[in-house]
Length: 158
Image (cartoon, helix red, strand yellow):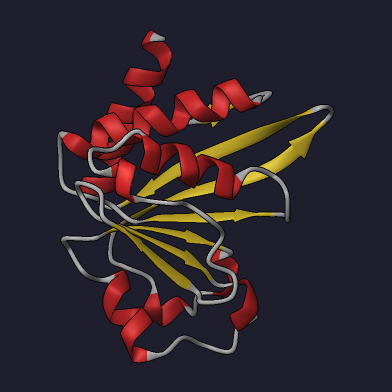
């Protein structure tokens, strides 16, 4: 799934589509790739805001504490691995990544060691293009394919 010329409005719409599909199925981790300032945290902010319980969540980049947990339904674990720079992650972070009750969204997934990848996940690769952005989404695993198919169907209906 490729979303072109992502503006703030398109990013919000895409995040809302992810939230709607989360509500109707089992959470599938999202691994996000992309440069600083390309829109990853903005996406997470609007994803969390579109979920029940978001009134108790203040979304910010978890750069300094690596993981923020938001009390939404389902709960969201927002990871930012930028500071790890490929040095690995501790056992608590790795355990949170595989928690089936937690919807995990990982920024700077390029710093996630391959052995720590979940069995199934969605990748979102964010890139700058002219004045906008491109987001290329791909699914790994059967549940991830079902989830991304839901997102794509919802997004194309809007």
